[in-house]
Length: 93
Image 1: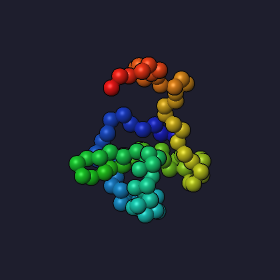
Image 2: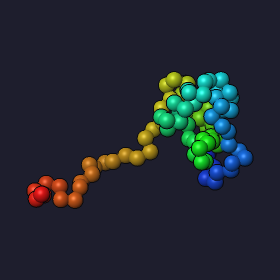
Image 3: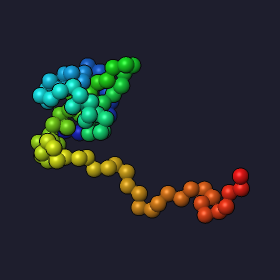
């Protein structure tokens, strides 16, 4: 499976419509994947682009796990709860 590139190449990016056509889904479905952070994208001005390599990774993950069942693992985990400064102390107002 390919790893996403660290450097964004605008010539290797697709519009949301192009990605939808390649996936054989509607444009709103691709926007749903983007909003759910399942499909990485880049905002350039008012335009949104999807790097081709990220789309290929998305497709490979969906092939491996099934189109409806794959959900990416969270990237951040917290072993201990966050403790805020002054937690447990009375704060005068």
